[in-house]
Length: 104
Image 1 (cartoon, helix red, strand yellow):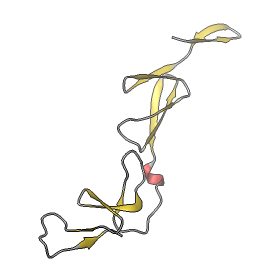
Image 2 (cartoon, helix red, strand yellow):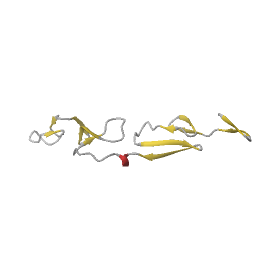
Image 3 (cartoon, rainbow, N blue to C red):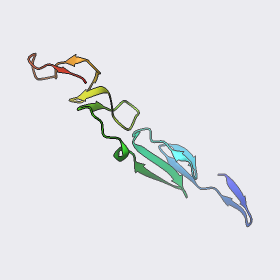
Image 4 (tube, rainbow, N blue to C red):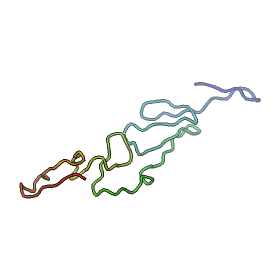
């Protein structure tokens, strides 16, 4: 454990254990599983806040969330949990050949 010198001697620095990693007091703590979490080590505790509420409203109807990013974007489309490139035509699974969609 690290320590800091104060006017009253030495005191141990607080640290946090999170997802099998050790972080020092005051440091950002990344979440490997959720890019929408912003976490910070403070006084030996990890506190997190959600960032997805701050994502901007988008003009597209089916925005996709790129892997590792919190906010969706209009560069690709997400339909029925599948990602399609902008401009790509596709037939939604289970709807037969009569339904054609295009990512916009």
